[in-house]
Length: 373
Ligand SMILES: Cc1cc2nc3c(=O)[nH]c(=O)nc-3n(C[C@H](O)[C@H](O)[C@H](O)COP(=O)(O)O)c2cc1C
Image 1 (cartoon, helix red, strand yellow):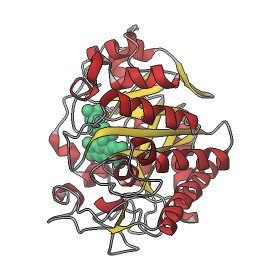
Image 2 (cartoon, rainbow, N blue to C red):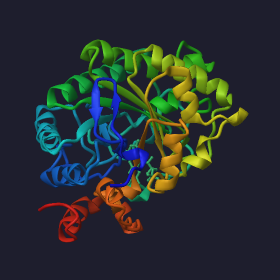
Image 3 (cartoon, protein in one colour):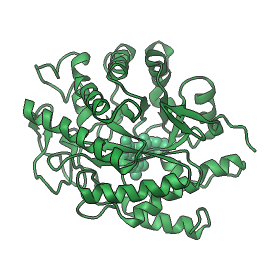
């Protein structure tokens, strides 16, 4: 048995984890048109539990029937049918000994498919950088969003809370607020997309307010034991190289506000980049190590962690508590079992990024004998 540190047990809040390997959230745009998760999605998620991951984070799931949806065929958590279908998936994953956390996502200005609305909302009427993502069926520039009113903000916040209550009823161990990668919560956090002059705009302590209010409102609605995590990143799907202007000073303010709001953990994403490339802040500290130091909370590190030597040093050197694996998990749904048996990992194949490959992935894995049929 390999003694890699990722194979040691750990805890997130009251949640016991058999190892420190989690599946990173990955949008697969494979839900039914009305946002209901499908049986194929159940197979897809169950495969990671069969493969030994202690924790499975779901893809970004939309939170209301207004402006939150980001892609067509994205799953939701806003109807009784959504809740029932997620309940099935969670039950299957739990039966195999893994825990599951639902990622709650509001796309804001970078929505490119919303069955409820044609227009978009954001903190300010700033057209997003870049163009829509072809892998999610988009093309051309993003539209300029409408600046949110106080009522719009209240509506979005209520959506997150109602979605978390549904997630709790569906049996999830917790939720993760998607505050990363350029979506709504990150649009508030980011200086150039948030040009507001009210309590949500201006200095970083104001720009993090919406994230903190969401975390604290979910905490109040779901009780002290429910896991309420939040994912953050400097880079964005439409701006990979963005970095927080105030560096470690901004990071400290953001992390402290979220801990104060009642977050159970912080998850730092390396959008499209390796952890090494995105982790280093001024003063030689790592962003994940700083998050641990400032908050004392468990921190999840992400970005190229299928390099298991890197994962070992991130964990051993105190930069994080858990590693989350995206592309490496698509290639190896049984990565923890392979690691335990010191077996080589399968190489990631770019084809696996095709969102609609969910079904074929699950079938391929079964055909390859990586997961039981
Ligand atoms: C197909 C795909 C879909 C993704 N969807 C999401 C998502 O829904 N939510 C999210 O926070 N990150 C999403 N990400 C980012 C991943 O969680 C992760 O940060 C990224 O893949 C880097 O980690 P890796 O090097 O282990 O792949 C996605 C990544 C991929 C490859």
